[in-house]
Length: 120
Image (cartoon, rainbow, N blue to C red; front, top):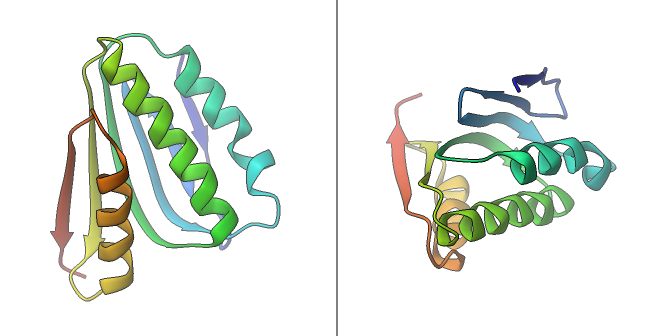
């Protein structure tokens, strides 16, 4: 199954193809749980190795909870024997996103998380 959810000024672009799941842009919609529900289904149904690429510029508190739920799901999949990897990219001058990425990484117990600083 492949999927693409185009982004907007308030929602991230989400794609899933051939075991690669990516989320990028901004995430500050009013109903984050509703927006992320189909994304959770994609992660739940995925079998096998999974590469996750995150490149968010901004997210609000409700999005943060949904993103954390997704990451916990991926952490459990890795523990269950699926080879999962997370790569979180943030802009060099974006200390807030770097700090957020570090905090999320530190909450995960099993899945490897690579943090990548990128130039603007």
